[in-house]
Length: 156
Image 1 (tube, rainbow, N blue to C red):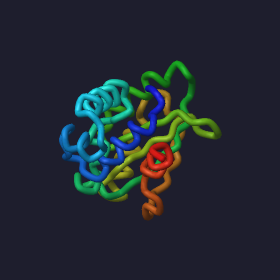
Image 2: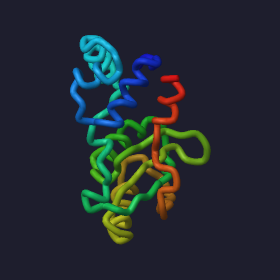
Image 3: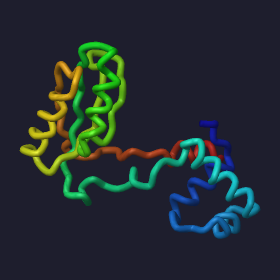
Image 4: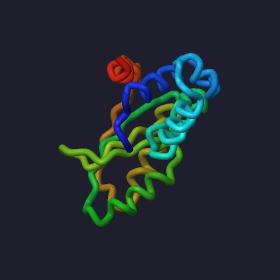
């Protein structure tokens, strides 16, 4: 993944404003050549800077409005590959990060309700290598995930 420059940031901000904009429309709006916009978008997709569109879907629209975070303690490093594969096989586990501190992994989990979260917790605890789990339910999103302020800073 490369570091974004001001032009990349401007293109991404323009896509935030109009996600359906064509390459030509973006080029016109930004005063850039169509080939420049096309090449930069292709590079951003190819190197993983632009992630899958499905990351923007609200899990509530899929009938899973409950968001929880689980910190997981894993028994040993050898088990982490198997642990990761087992966690990835649970559709409601939408993200897993390796962390520092008391826990080894942090999982973002979505559920229908607390009974469903209990079911998912049982699946997580059954994953190889998972020794302990601690769950916190998100009550309300105070500041949503955002990158636009950083893009504005880079674009200026």
